[in-house]
Image 1 (cartoon, rainbow over the protein chains, first blue to last red):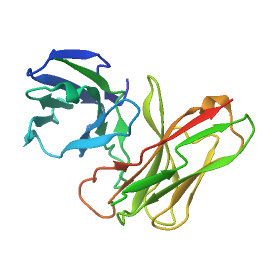
Image 2 (cartoon, chains in turn green, blue):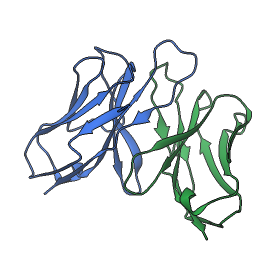
Image 3 (cartoon, each protein chain N blue to C red):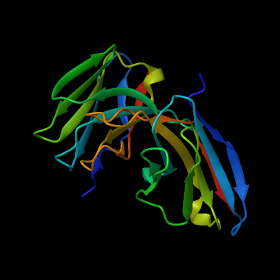
Length: 113
Length: 116
């Protein structure tokens, strides 16, 4: 079992729709969760961080965390073609405060005009 | 505000050659990391440095060495390059050190390395 799992996609949504990206993780002790966006040929860029159960909203992005189900998701409202990218879920393992992250393989999102 | 700077951006090596990838951050971060990214494999941690003066192995350390030169700089060395080390290498940093929750990592632009 992979430590952080994401559906590789591609996930295709029409412009203006809600894109829902999902991630599951295996380490129950994980405390910190991040979503990164990576455009083709570019470096990962932080979109959201979430540390407690529930929803966290930032503009068109909402991160959702459910520690009991070991599940974290990212919703993108009013999707735009510029949102087309690979979205990486990252989780800190329960191994002390080293800052290490375990990344999922990423989900490729395609927003069609 | 430069953030995390990596050099070089591109490099082609022959099998057996050595080289050092450089990384520097200007955010006064304690922790620094080296990743490699291969198609279908995601980002895999090679080495990390939780604080100045310490380094630890990550998921895929074989064939690499690192040096935390000072708080700003963290270099990655390939002693004898192999075609399997062809990849995109990313350096990252984060503000760690005694916090209850981990802080996000900030990435450099990457080094695209090809080994023939």
